[in-house]
Length: 123
Image 1 (cartoon, helix red, strand yellow):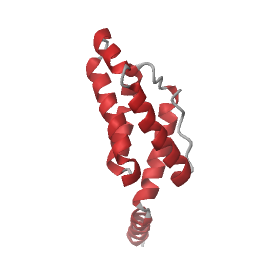
Image 2 (spheres, rainbow, N blue to C red):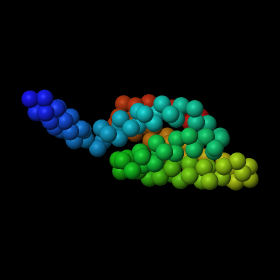
Image 3 (cartoon, one colour):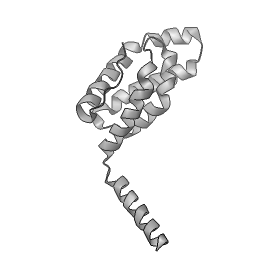
Image 4 (cartoon, rainbow, N blue to C red):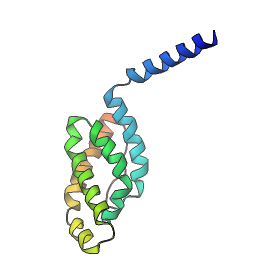
């Protein structure tokens, strides 16, 4: 009886997980990302490494409307991580923040419209 109950519980849980659409999964991940991105300073490229893991995950699961935008954010974060504390490289990267900010604004608009998630603004 105990085994049957455990099996039924596991099946019910698995069914609930598979019933979640890809967009819903993206929105849930996006909400988690929003919390971790709150302290990212767009004028400090090194801060982008704080969100790199979450951004990569979101890039993979992102809907077509924002997939390229996530690619821009991830690429920039990877470059910032690679630059580390190299001031010359970080200064070069800081010139790219306009494109990253634009891509992020598209992500933020989509997040609010499609997922009802407010991601922190990059100002």
